[in-house]
Length: 303
Image 1 (cartoon, rainbow, N blue to C red):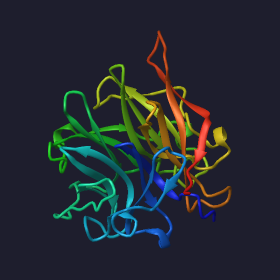
Image 2: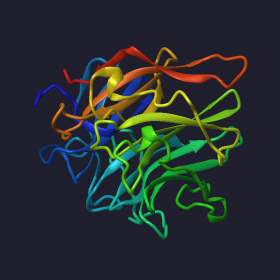
Image 3: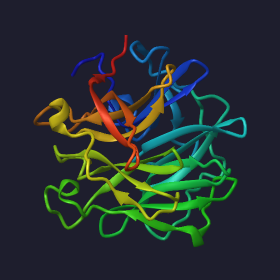
């Protein structure tokens, strides 16, 4: 293993006060697996330091919030002058709060967001009308992406708004033709009045793990999958298992997507963290579409 390579799966980058904060799923037992969430920091996306979390490198430490195992897929954002982390543990979704992006993130109730099924991969989207939506994955005859409007405290959904967004139905989304199709890792953007749902498909252990997107006129759908998906795939970068990340805007105003890849051609774990530039291409006869700037792909390393 390369000691400088950052090994975080399901990564997210939160940009705040001239600093980039990188979080994700830790696969290495020595570096935080099942202990919480590590955080790395950078000023320029090139030189990274860490882990720099408030508790032994951890931004969220097991015992301070909900969960005992399986700390996956965090998202960090600012809301009401506090920093929130939406995350998965014990195959349920939970929320923790901190005064700093470095943590410690805590939840005194140590409760999950109640649901009748297992649910993972939360993404909180704030719309222009101040409504808040929880995009997430429910485990029911596959990994299926759902959405529901959140209450203002962000701790529960409005059940009457719950809707299924997409499931794995297209050939590129289920290349192994399994009975448990997977769509997961949702991120949502709003662009020119339309909603873009970016997601990953296939089992994460499959080399064909890839990223595509769907478009809707409403945050609740219905969603139309695009013909140009996938926009991130192993053949683009000669790396297996490219997917499950998050979009962020860098300090130049450009969009980038942080993601993970397999360790190498034969091993899935530990997954390597990378970023790639993405952008909208303007169209006159159809909605703008997303492309990946292939020369903008690079792995993230520490100093």
